[in-house]
Picture 1: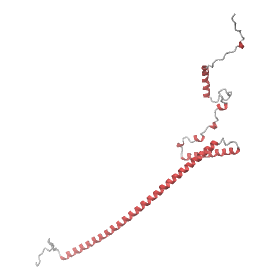
Picture 2 (picture 1 turned 30 degrees about the vertical axis):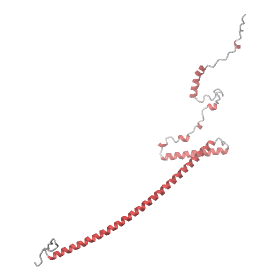
Picture 3 (picture 1 turned 90 degrees about the horizontal axis):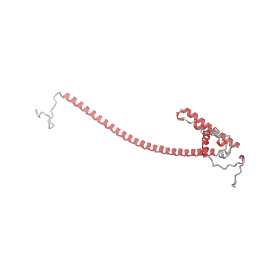
Picture 4 (picture 1 turned 120 degrees about the vertical axis):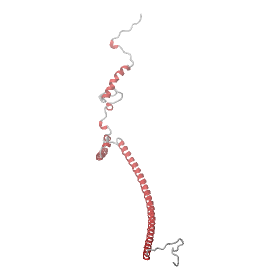
Length: 225
C-alpha cells in the first residue's frame, strides 16, 4: 500500500522560505520616501538598525546653530548700502568675530574645548595670517615699485628742468641781443631824422630854387652862367 502523509495540526506546519517580494517592497518604499522628504525628523524615534546603521541623532535635523554663514548673510546686498551703513556693518562684524574668538579662548582655558576640536579655528587663523603675510609682501613690492617710479619721475623732471633752464637762458640772450640791435637801429633812425630836418631847414633858407642833379652827378646850370 502506498504510504500516506500524516495530517499534522495547523500550528505544526513549517513554511518553506519564500523569496523576497521586491514589487511589494517598491510599493511601500514610495510613501516612506515621501515622508522622509516632507519631515526629515520623523525617524527620530525609530529603533536603531531599522534603517541600516543610522541612529536617531544622525537622522535628526541638524541644530540651527550649526548652520554657517551668519556673518556672510549680513553681507548680502552690500552694494546697495551707503558708506556709513557699510562702515557700521564692518564694525559690527568685526566685533562679532572678536567676541567669538574671545569666547573660544575662554572655553579652551576652562577645558570645555579641546585642541582637536579647535584645529579648524587654528587652521583658519593660520590661513588668515598667511594671507596677511602675502598681502604685506605684495604691498612692499608695490611700495618699492612706486618708489622706483617716483625716483625715475624725479630724474626726468630734473632733466626737463635743466633743459628748460638752458632754453630760457638762450632765449634771454637772444632777446637781449635783439633789444640791443633795436636800440641801435632806433638811434640810426633818430640820426637820419635829424639830418633830414637839417637838410630841409637849409633848403628853406636858400630859397625855392632847388638845383637839378644831372645823371653825371653835376648841377644842371653850366659854369659861368
